[in-house]
Image 1: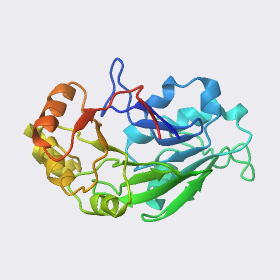
Image 2 (image 1 turned 90 degrees about the horizontal axis):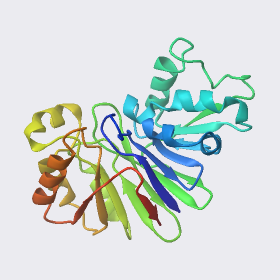
Image 3 (image 1 turned 180 degrees about the horizontal axis):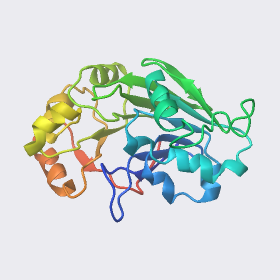
Length: 254
């Protein structure tokens, strides 16, 4: 299993892309602006998108992706997400006002986009890769994912703040090799974190101390301009685990 980070920023700017991770050549976890760095051929090869939640920085590229490769899709791209996230996409994006309803084009019987609802706790298999949806604590309904093959396991928190559900589930695993977890703001913005459903270094340090595994830990989703401060605070606050800063272009073989 090859994991490539196409985007991991909490915003956009020169060289910054929002959350997008590609597994092998045909699966995405979230579809932020990082999708735009793929070639048309690579985009046409995508078949599955697992979404963590409905916020724009995690779904922004889906409309343009489908439109860009519409004529090259001989089978639909499947969106795996909570029903509430699917409802948000259908109501607010693919509503024939903001963007065409590609779940009915070119024909309702032959769409280029389809939806498969998932529930927290549910597991879905794509070839030899298994995706488990785990509930987290965000300002809109959000989830993380545990992704495993026959050899290794990694987890992605999605957007979240203080919670027990994600960490309790990780502790039930026999192994955890890689953890990608968010820290959106510096500690000065701890009140914003609590209201917006994000971690800052202090809140993340409290929660990651619950984790009994010792995976490689990478910090993601920093707000633009604050990356250095946020990571420095994480490195000081988190004493139970060694942490690394995630960057776009990072690749992991699992």
